[in-house]
Every structure is written in C-alpha cells, then in structure tokens.
Length: 106
Image (cartoon, rainbow, N blue to C red; front, side):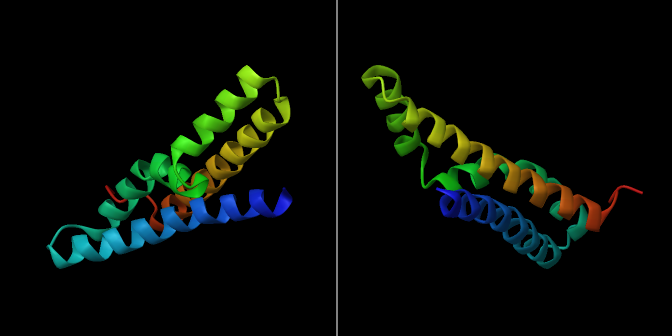
C-alpha cells in the first residue's frame, strides 16, 4: 500500500511539473509570456494530475461504491488515502513551480 501511495504522489507531482514546463515552452513558441503560462498552468492542472495519478476516476468511484454498499471499509480508506497522496503530490508540484517562477506579474 505504501508503494502505491508513493507512486500516486509522484505521478501527480510529475504531471504538474511536466505539464507546466511543456506548456511554458508552447507559450514561448506562440510569443506569450512563458512564466505567466507556467504559473497559471501549475494551478489549473491540479485536478487532472489527481485523475492521472488514480488511473481514472471511474475505478476510484467504483471502489468507493463497493466499500459503501458492500460494507468493506478497507476499500474506502485505501481509496481516500490514494486521493490524499495524489492531492499532496499535485499541491507540492504547484507550490514548487510557483516558488521557482515567483510572481510573473511583477
């Protein structure tokens, strides 16, 4: 279980870092300010990073449903821990990117 949590954390972290940096390259190619694009993308990619880390939301919802209606509470706790690990990874990636970029508007 610990290995799954670590992998979920770093997948979400990587989606934020990679998506923001590659998006910044795209903004540079289009002649838009890349630091502003990187800053904005880091904030807006959070939900997608969580979904990518969980492997799709349908499996997580099915697991929660099975845990609620079948009385298997271990599935609920496991899924909530996975969501929390992915959320922490996405938030850490966002904070890191915004710390490196700084305030792009000044």
